[in-house]
Image 1 (cartoon, rainbow, N blue to C red):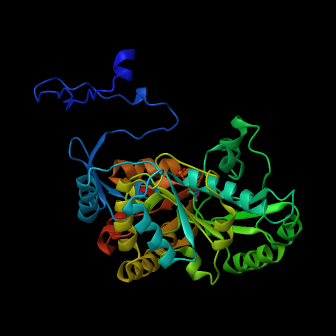
Image 2 (image 1 turned 90 degrees about the vertical axis):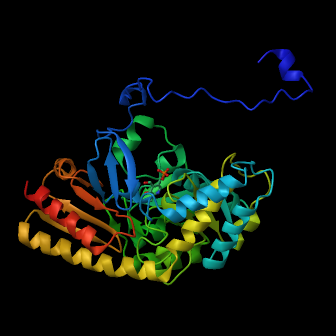
Image 3 (image 1 turned 120 degrees about the vertical axis):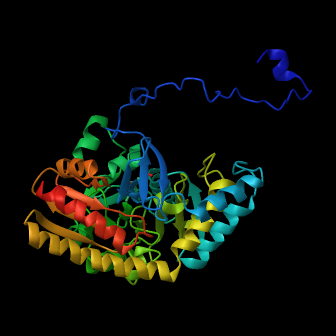
Length: 417
Ligand SMILES: Cc1ncc(COP(=O)(O)O)c(C=O)c1O
């Protein structure tokens, strides 16, 4: 743009039509190497999705027990999600920034306030961003308590809270952490042990504890409910915030809308992301009144967070995920799946441990998990690991028993190799 065009008071807007490749033009051969190599991506190219299946360009079908790592809970190509996207697009407002009010974000926030402990909600774009925001909110709140040194964030052994500087400091996997030292200060990882926590949770220094009710990346470890209840009591006693990270286990995956509903207590903050907007990027921080009243305009921000497109889609998705019949389906099918995994273990002798609930399961195997995932892949089944020797199962919540049974058959063949 020339300087005169930049300063011209006259609108230079035209209906710009981008050049469109003609159907006969040779398509550029796509290549994985132009994408920064932070992932070992599985070939071939996926081009289509429908229900619990993903399809490659040559029409090969894969049963998806990964759901984009706990994201596409309503499956692929869901008509309701597509319709919600169309409705949002029809308004012409994909984005406005958070300088202006828009209806979808306000409606979604009100829905969360009605369906949870929260008194207000901050929307963002990913899980790590939600947790980073929660850490800031905790420190802002701590600054209002009259304890000038109160700032520390505590996470637990085995935790995964994200890959950004603050969340990486709270994530307990050396291979993720070591290349990036020094990590953010004032973050400590401690054992899942109330006696140790009782020492660490000093009212003068500790601002918040962050916990996944089920540690997903850490191997699908269901954190003991009595431990969590003890932690809630301890955090209250010490005036420390309890943040639940339900980014992977929340929004229906355990058979209740929030995992905390099964624990009999409420957190001070709760973070969400993955399935929130049906595959569109979105995160959220649910906060109680005490945290909300510590936050002031200018304390935090995001350009994209909670824009009208994603918020409208998310409102559709959360209502579907809160449907009691879907939640009952997750509980019943999850119990059946856990039993099937046990039977598989008994039959094959190839499984060392089974952990999980709802439609979130982990299976420890003797072999490297990657070898089993590769064999399953070559037979049309998508699986993901959670550590070197753990297979993780995060199917779309709408999967049927027959579809899961098909997956178990392929899994059995892959296990016995
Ligand atoms: C429990 C938990 N917290 C945080 C994150 C980070 O989310 P994101 O990858 O959207 O940044 C993840 C991602 O796997 C997660 O499972």
